[in-house]
Length: 121
Image 1 (cartoon, rainbow, N blue to C red):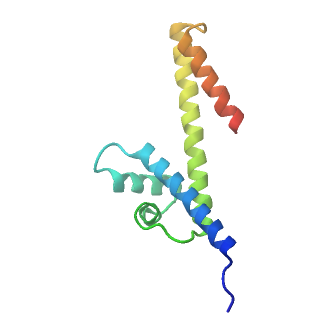
Image 2 (image 1 turned 135 degrees about the vertical axis):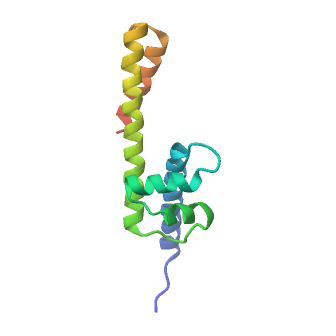
Image 3 (image 1 turned 180 degrees about the horizontal axis):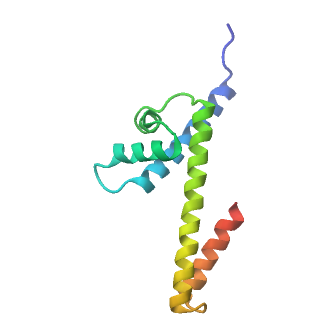
C-alpha cells in the first residue's frame, strides 16, 4: 500500500476549494432570498446537472477530494453562468445606448466592462 504524497493532497484541496467557490457563486446568483437555498440548488441541478448533494457538501462538509466529473460539471456551469451574465449586460447596454445615446457616461462604463469580460475569455 502506498501513501498519497503531500503534493497530491494539496492539489485535491485546491480543486475542492475552487469547486466550492464556483458552487457558492452559482448559489448566490440563483437564490431569490432567505430560505431559498435548497430550491436554488434544485434549480441549478435541473439546469446544469450538478446534484444538490454536491452543493450541500461543498457548503457544509467540504470533502477531501472531488470527482473529476463533478469538478468539470461545476466549472461548466460557472462558465455558462458567466457567459449568461455577459449576454444580459450586452442587452442592457444596447437598450441604454438606444435610450441615452452612445456618448452617455453609463454607456461608456458598461462598454468598458463588456470589453474587459470579453478579453478574459
